[in-house]
Image (cartoon, rainbow, N blue to C red; front, side, top):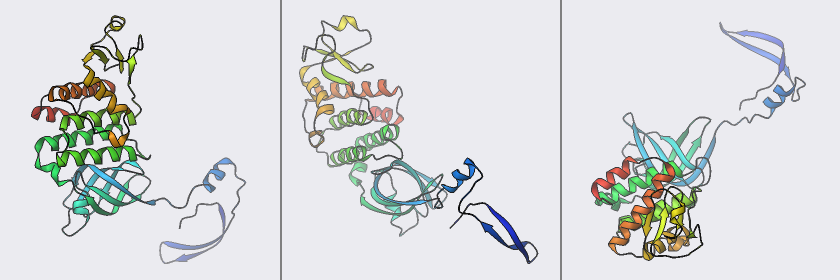
Length: 296
């Protein structure tokens, strides 16, 4: 235990050639002003232990045996942590710190870095690696989460969204473009980027043929009111508009429970992607790779 305080040396004794044993008087109170009062409130413990579950969304090899991983945790949001001996045969960290692995972590939080003391895998999502398109899309979701999820704050909604998306991708029970649109729109909503998809901004018309979606501004307009706005709106038919609204307003349990024909899914995915890129004003290398496989 470390103690920082003021005191008066009242005796000293030489110990060997370079050390001293000293006696002194210290005070638990201080009259030296605000600087001393600030020191007295400084915590003695400089690190803490955190136990949480999380999803590995990035990994980097450090030397021959260690890893630097980025984990989307339930309790602390985005955490970048060192995992020592993470590539050593027989260690639970070998699988628990791999990309896409959902694990239970014991993490020591220091002043400047996190260190993974223990990690035990709960779900490896091996199925994602069996299909190159699903793998590319999962990598894009991870990159998107690194841009939008908070740090040092709870991120349970983000984690739940990715875990469900990975499950549906791996099992092949939902079309990849449906999952992509749902993840993009809902993750943006979690991060505070909430589009207005209720009705036309000008006249409050709920539905028209077609409705026009302005991805940079994040609102709808009917054809009659569209002359008031510039930009390049995206025309949405009734089915695609309903699906886009669903990705924002539906209860989470029903988020991935809708259907569209292939042409409708392409239109939905294009609209959600343009909104994502316009809102964040940046591109994603993983998204470019996905489009090399599946043009939208």
